[in-house]
Image: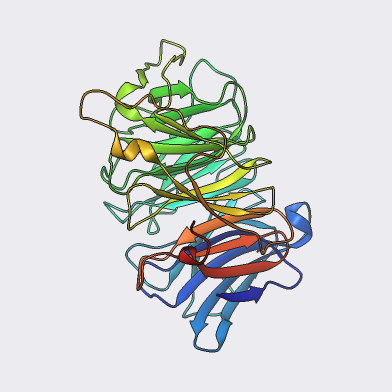
Length: 346
């Protein structure tokens, strides 16, 4: 395992480079993101540990970051002042592009894994915006209809469909969007019974499976084929049930990420100061026509716990490279950890 201290800045997000196995990006904020500057770290993994190859300071806190899928040196950041900045790590000091259309904190940024020339952001203003790094304005804006605007904590492109986006919000809805259809959600589910949904991720091997995590301390697995369809004229209501539920965290689950190597493995980061590795057993029970309705008991499916952090764990990611099982986590304790899940599996 390796560690790096983001001295003076509390971590919010960490991501492996899609091009290099030894490079990470970390978004961090001073004073826990409440007030003060932000810093984007570019970290290198070396035989002697993690080193800061470069960093960029911003006037407001950073809440998320995403590597470009077409340019190995570019990273987009989500900022507390509502702006989005694109940095090139081969240059110094300033972003190469900046946009400001959101009216509240930008809380997530996600690059399109299929089409690769666009990315999306979500904000506390309730909006999802789609961007191209070569355009001065957003390409599209998506927002719920017939519902009060709520904080949209995360939005993520499908790894299988270039236009399909999933989002999760403080109103407890998991929504699907396809800009080809319109600027309204095409499907939705009331996913966590009123509790805020903080994170979501698409399964990398099962194109219809999305996981969500919430302040209710649970992780739920959804089969999108069984979500209700919506329209601009109809409110988004759904009685769909998850195909699995994972219990074990003691506080809100802030971030989740499916493994790029195994369809059943999921990593989570929580305010209980732990990161956990889960096995989604519904992966072994699903058929093409009928989702599994098996529920895991409290703690069921839990494969391992990482407890080196001493504050909220708020970000996590899997390495695409090398031996399967290497992950990174970041927390409010100003620490980035890189570790092998095989050291905690049971």
